[in-house]
Image 1 (cartoon, rainbow, N blue to C red):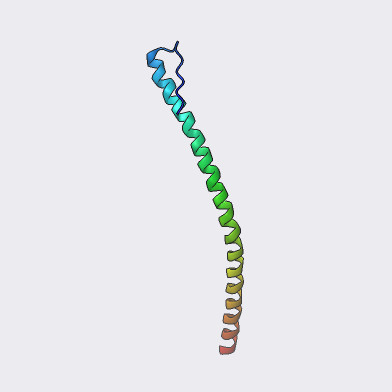
Image 2: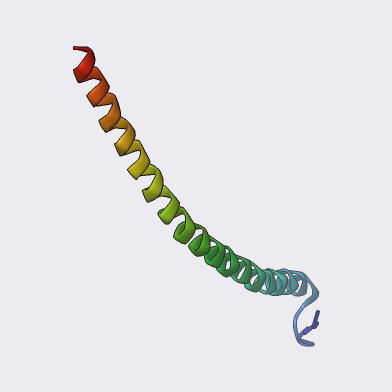
Length: 74
């Protein structure tokens, strides 16, 4: 990690400055991680959507068969 410390900064302010600097560096890692999760989510939703529609079609067929069975029993 690169250390940049201004020479004219008082010591009590230097700690605060370094903390903010470290937090800023951490933000970039969080953004990169978030972008990766977004890409993973997009891949998941693409596959899930196809799977979901296939399952819904099967459920619809099952409901129709159940209705036919109920009509024949009545």
